[in-house]
Length: 147
Image (cartoon, rainbow, N blue to C red):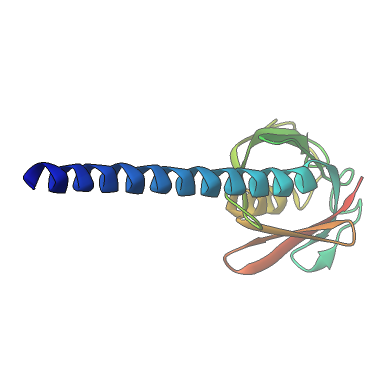
Protein backbone atom coordinates (compact mmCIF):
# COMPACT_ATOMS: atom_id res chain seq x y z
CA UNK A 1 0.00 0.00 0.00
CA UNK A 2 2.86 2.39 0.87
CA UNK A 3 4.55 1.66 -2.47
CA UNK A 4 1.36 2.47 -4.40
CA UNK A 5 0.89 5.72 -2.43
CA UNK A 6 4.53 6.72 -3.06
CA UNK A 7 4.13 5.87 -6.76
CA UNK A 8 0.97 8.01 -6.98
CA UNK A 9 2.74 10.95 -5.33
CA UNK A 10 5.75 10.62 -7.66
CA UNK A 11 3.54 10.47 -10.76
CA UNK A 12 1.50 13.41 -9.51
CA UNK A 13 4.63 15.50 -8.92
CA UNK A 14 6.08 14.60 -12.31
CA UNK A 15 2.87 15.60 -14.08
CA UNK A 16 2.53 18.89 -12.21
CA UNK A 17 6.16 19.82 -12.94
CA UNK A 18 5.72 19.10 -16.65
CA UNK A 19 2.49 21.10 -16.96
CA UNK A 20 4.02 23.98 -15.02
CA UNK A 21 7.08 23.91 -17.32
CA UNK A 22 4.81 23.81 -20.41
CA UNK A 23 2.78 26.77 -19.10
CA UNK A 24 5.96 28.78 -18.45
CA UNK A 25 7.30 27.90 -21.89
CA UNK A 26 4.06 29.03 -23.55
CA UNK A 27 3.99 32.26 -21.50
CA UNK A 28 7.62 33.03 -22.35
CA UNK A 29 7.12 32.50 -26.08
CA UNK A 30 4.03 34.74 -26.01
CA UNK A 31 5.99 37.46 -24.19
CA UNK A 32 8.88 37.20 -26.65
CA UNK A 33 6.52 37.42 -29.60
CA UNK A 34 4.82 40.51 -28.14
CA UNK A 35 8.17 42.19 -27.41
CA UNK A 36 9.33 41.56 -30.98
CA UNK A 37 6.10 43.02 -32.37
CA UNK A 38 6.54 46.16 -30.27
CA UNK A 39 10.21 46.41 -31.23
CA UNK A 40 9.38 46.20 -34.95
CA UNK A 41 7.14 49.26 -34.66
CA UNK A 42 10.00 51.23 -33.12
CA UNK A 43 12.62 50.16 -35.66
CA UNK A 44 12.30 53.28 -37.77
CA UNK A 45 13.94 56.59 -38.48
CA UNK A 46 12.18 59.30 -36.46
CA UNK A 47 12.40 63.10 -36.80
CA UNK A 48 11.47 65.33 -33.84
CA UNK A 49 8.33 67.46 -34.33
CA UNK A 50 7.30 68.51 -30.84
CA UNK A 51 9.26 69.05 -27.61
CA UNK A 52 7.40 69.57 -24.32
CA UNK A 53 4.22 70.63 -26.08
CA UNK A 54 5.87 73.05 -28.52
CA UNK A 55 6.47 72.58 -32.24
CA UNK A 56 10.21 72.59 -32.90
CA UNK A 57 11.87 74.59 -35.65
CA UNK A 58 15.40 74.95 -36.93
CA UNK A 59 15.66 78.05 -34.72
CA UNK A 60 15.62 75.67 -31.73
CA UNK A 61 18.18 73.30 -33.28
CA UNK A 62 20.79 73.59 -36.03
CA UNK A 63 18.73 70.95 -37.84
CA UNK A 64 15.88 68.82 -36.55
CA UNK A 65 16.93 66.02 -34.17
CA UNK A 66 16.65 62.45 -35.47
CA UNK A 67 16.64 59.02 -33.87
CA UNK A 68 17.23 55.73 -35.69
CA UNK A 69 16.07 52.74 -33.63
CA UNK A 70 16.99 49.09 -34.04
CA UNK A 71 15.88 46.18 -31.86
CA UNK A 72 18.47 46.98 -29.17
CA UNK A 73 20.24 50.26 -29.98
CA UNK A 74 19.57 53.78 -31.15
CA UNK A 75 21.63 56.44 -32.85
CA UNK A 76 20.95 59.80 -34.34
CA UNK A 77 21.53 63.48 -33.86
CA UNK A 78 20.51 66.28 -31.52
CA UNK A 79 20.49 68.52 -34.56
CA UNK A 80 24.19 69.18 -33.99
CA UNK A 81 25.83 66.38 -32.00
CA UNK A 82 25.68 62.65 -32.76
CA UNK A 83 24.02 60.47 -30.12
CA UNK A 84 23.87 56.73 -29.52
CA UNK A 85 23.06 54.20 -26.85
CA UNK A 86 21.05 51.13 -25.93
CA UNK A 87 17.34 50.77 -26.49
CA UNK A 88 15.56 48.68 -23.85
CA UNK A 89 11.94 47.66 -24.31
CA UNK A 90 10.20 46.24 -21.26
CA UNK A 91 6.96 45.33 -22.97
CA UNK A 92 4.20 47.02 -24.89
CA UNK A 93 4.37 50.78 -24.54
CA UNK A 94 7.59 50.79 -22.48
CA UNK A 95 11.00 51.83 -23.80
CA UNK A 96 14.11 53.38 -22.29
CA UNK A 97 17.14 55.04 -23.87
CA UNK A 98 20.07 53.75 -21.80
CA UNK A 99 23.80 54.51 -21.84
CA UNK A 100 23.12 57.61 -23.94
CA UNK A 101 26.32 59.22 -25.17
CA UNK A 102 26.65 62.42 -27.16
CA UNK A 103 29.38 64.29 -28.97
CA UNK A 104 30.29 67.60 -27.37
CA UNK A 105 30.70 69.93 -30.33
CA UNK A 106 29.71 73.48 -29.51
CA UNK A 107 26.58 74.39 -31.43
CA UNK A 108 23.75 76.83 -31.54
CA UNK A 109 21.07 74.30 -30.57
CA UNK A 110 19.12 76.08 -27.84
CA UNK A 111 17.03 73.08 -26.89
CA UNK A 112 19.68 70.35 -27.21
CA UNK A 113 20.06 69.82 -23.44
CA UNK A 114 16.29 69.65 -22.96
CA UNK A 115 16.02 67.05 -25.74
CA UNK A 116 18.81 64.92 -24.22
CA UNK A 117 17.36 65.12 -20.70
CA UNK A 118 13.93 64.02 -21.92
CA UNK A 119 15.46 61.05 -23.77
CA UNK A 120 17.28 60.03 -20.59
CA UNK A 121 14.08 60.12 -18.50
CA UNK A 122 11.85 58.49 -21.12
CA UNK A 123 9.89 55.43 -20.04
CA UNK A 124 6.93 55.03 -22.38
CA UNK A 125 5.84 55.34 -25.97
CA UNK A 126 2.89 55.02 -28.29
CA UNK A 127 2.63 55.02 -32.06
CA UNK A 128 -0.41 56.48 -33.81
CA UNK A 129 -0.82 57.60 -37.44
CA UNK A 130 2.91 57.09 -38.20
CA UNK A 131 3.90 59.31 -35.26
CA UNK A 132 5.93 58.26 -32.23
CA UNK A 133 4.96 59.79 -28.88
CA UNK A 134 7.44 59.54 -25.99
CA UNK A 135 6.59 60.07 -22.35
CA UNK A 136 8.05 59.92 -18.86
CA UNK A 137 6.43 59.77 -15.41
CA UNK A 138 5.10 63.32 -15.85
CA UNK A 139 3.39 62.70 -19.20
CA UNK A 140 3.96 63.31 -22.91
CA UNK A 141 7.39 64.82 -23.63
CA UNK A 142 8.08 64.55 -27.37
CA UNK A 143 6.58 63.50 -30.67
CA UNK A 144 8.32 62.38 -33.85
CA UNK A 145 7.27 61.71 -37.43
CA UNK A 146 8.67 58.91 -39.55
CA UNK A 147 11.66 60.18 -41.46
